Image 1: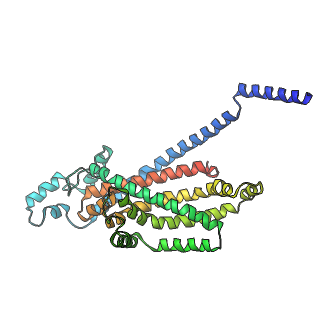
Image 2 (image 1 turned 90 degrees about the vertical axis):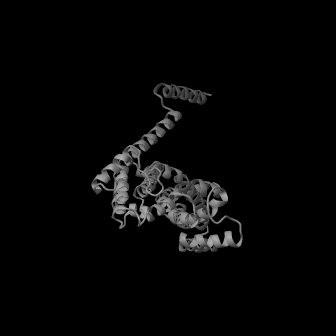
Image 3 (image 1 turned 60 degrees about the horizontal axis):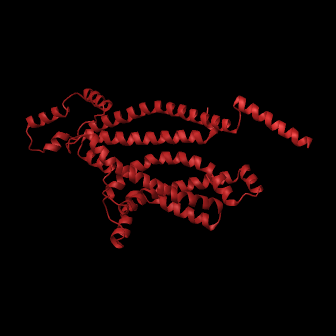
Length: 344
């Protein structure tokens, strides 16, 4: 009886103290979340400062390289029979008769005001063309990324759990096969098999889920192979840690140990790799969109380069560069939030 009275008094005293000084489980949770949120905000602001010189460098290099390509876009657009006065008038209309340094300053002035110029070949604003084609490329890239993750995570976990067994060897062979087929070789093979021979899927175009399947598989195949190897390596490292042995010693179910504890920590380095590979997907979209006649920004870029459409090439590269930098920024911030060991 005396012991229970002492316990009750202890609980009342500490409860009053917690209410007075704001100490308690809810306060602690709030403080932790506040620290994580504050750290994420600081990390985001720091990395935003890194974006500006990267974007400036990318756009500047593209501007200089595209103007160093031999050939006259105005001459190519009007044809060999155009008169000198017509050529001069069109160059003046698009500002191509100005010195290169002045064109560079005019271009950046337009970028800062949201004006990316007009396309020489399509006679439309670059902003409108990029915004029209960009959603298709983003849809294809996200679909390929989700497909790669859906294949890589279960395969990598299975290979790690069945290390040195036939399942591990099978996953390794399939991964090697996926790495051996580049997109420009895998795409035509898929078209021949599933479109021409079997007739299950359309050859080219966009507009439905069926049109998305083959391009997404073409882009996501090699990425799935890379991520599978990464997941397997990270899972093997985590499964050998002391906290995994402790969790098993406590009698936790195996699926809880594997998926809630080991995979949760193993996914952190995979997250970084996904952010880096997102840029590779954007670059691979140029080849894939050309193979499947996908109306994305990659196919638009190829057409603009072949026509020496300066403003359109610069606008497409700017959109791709911004996407790549922002995705890596987001990945970097999420990684630092998810991994407390690297916070400073």
